[in-house]
Length: 328
Image (cartoon, rainbow, N blue to C red; front, top):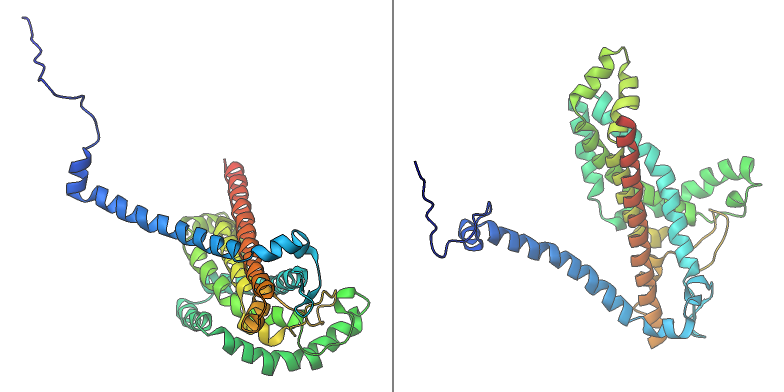
């Protein structure tokens, strides 16, 4: 029996996807376009920020060039500007903050997620969320009235007497300085580390814990050797979120760092940060070079944050790949 094939004139090839107009009618294409606009807006805002900082910091680039980043002199009267003391102060205070906040934050998150009773965990998490919402100027007042006196009368003698031979603990203490600013920053960023790390730990599948316990592990062994490694990518993300918060903090650091544009090895010495100098001197910048030098510092802070977050992303990707290879 012969079969005939009928070809419809003008019929195109059959495809698995619906036409653009059908998608538009169903709302799929509209949703894609709207969300694409939203995503593109974020990129455009970032590019606009960089562009504005770049074009408004032309004079320091023309006069100082690369020396702007490696010069320690900051003299508005003589029109000599260098960013190195502020880059140094920003990095040192952020490093001190992470050294204090990371073990405390991760330890508290492990307790709240794995070891504390649910009612205690939820109650404490409520207060931690409140701490994250406290304005930075309040932390600055906390630093001025509590941390500065403690630094001068308790912490400095406790560290200087046994470790005074080390450069980082030498010299006098005025209460304000790199370590004081780092401790205040640590108090500020600990809630971020706790909140994010706790949620990441709680999202670890229950099967992971039960498998470790079934093999004879203790509660702590299953937490430390199974749950924490499983959640390490999210925990690292919380740490770098805290780092970004510490790098850009302004008011609290300004109130306790000492505001002295000098590079000192001692953590007890006063210093300056990029955000603090911009906040203090922007309204006083009379000359065009002075004003654009402060804007150039803003660009430096933006690039510094961008680079550190990029390195954090690379570290997370590498760590995840190693974990996948080990698991495979």
